[in-house]
Image 1 (cartoon, chains in turn orange, cyan):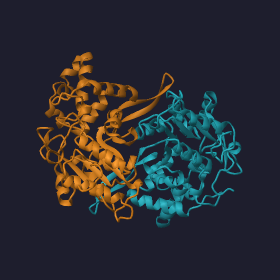
Image 2 (cartoon, chains in turn red, brown):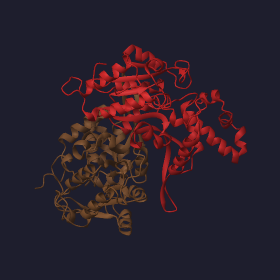
Image 3 (cartoon, rainbow over the protein chains, first blue to last red):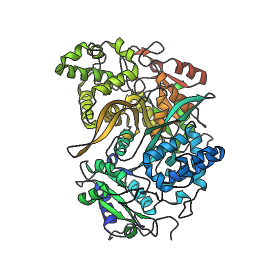
Image 4 (cartoon, each protein chain N blue to C red):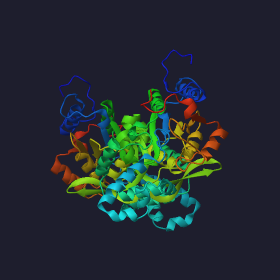
Length: 311
Length: 311
């Protein structure tokens, strides 16, 4: 880089991916350039699991569910013999992966039905404060990708509004997304449990119903973006086929567009997976990215540092 | 007012309502005061119909629907004899009011099923550019309340984030809410038609399905706020029982809270209605406001000016 300004993406190695990002941002923010976009148009959407933090060997929310079912089974031992709880309690990842995202969401929502949103929030926050990732033996909220944190901050400093658009459920992400990514609750879009307004001892509460209201994954992502943003993103980042429709919608707009894919290539520092993976499978979106010239970020080659604890 | 700063609410007469608003804003923004709230907590939610613009003799979206059905009936004359289209075409307001908000939404959604969001947006914008209100003979987008525009701007200049939380449908409000109120599409929460992601001639589109996805009215408003904001508002403004649950949720939070109700008392400059009205009925929320000391704005007494065209 020949610029004298400080490097906005210090954890990114110089290379095609980094240049493509910086070129795009400079293009859409240069007044008078053909590609200039007003700040109101600078909408950037990010998948969460596998794009902003680690999603292997299973999404963090699944580990949360395992521990929750353990707690509940201590009070109701019959659960231990019943599927899918049995698979959860035995950390039978293959069976769990076979349920798919929707099946896992349904299971999580059923497990937490009847409680208020506030109660659920406390339980999730307590768990996140103490639980540890099986490989890294660190709190899950440490498993955020530093290069992506830098990218989010860089975009915001250039007038972008950054959103999470995740298959995970909103109330599981919102308590920590602001601290981890600088993204406030009102910019976290995700899957949703049905909730009902009630008065409980005269106090208005939202109670969780045992029903999915919305699955923000795959073809659901453009719907979630439409519902909560109402504008087409000009930049989208994801890592799997669950983001493919979000990529398509982003790329289909007029003017400059940026689609980025985090490719998990670093088995040593993180995990290595793509086409054959059940969690975070990257197959069709990859082919499309190659055909359309979208930016593929090679974690091993493009990132100097992945996690915050690395030197 | 003894302050030397310019009056932030020049269209409001000095009085209890204006003082209550200014006192609240000064209290939550004064660093070191017991009531100080950080900018992230300064969430303000506003009903739209009857709170930010005129909703009589029917909500604007109903007039839109009448004109749309007229267009469609010109191509399919059999519609003219069928209810509820007959009532629409004959501007039989009593029958229409009897359908309730959900019934009217369903009718609107059925009428526009099958088209893409983009196509619907063009139709709505075209209509708003030409249609005129039956009493005022002006474009509907002229029927915004100047004192409320001032209030929105005043709140934003004090670090508040302003949201619309309306029973109307999002795609009908978003095209003009930013110009009229300074509220961008991503801060417009409302009722929603079910939409489906599809590829149409290789182009990704969202197609409107003939089904309601969400009714953002009454007990739906706290749900809409939860889904799209994820924080409890510290200020809410509305004008009818459809806002009552939003008021309750707002008032139930810790720290300073402001609940405001626009009371339609000016039959000459606008309309006069409350407990007995089918559109914008204000009854239970009014009783609750009196009991709890919420702020009731008397349009006739408290507003010097209502509409932008007034001197």
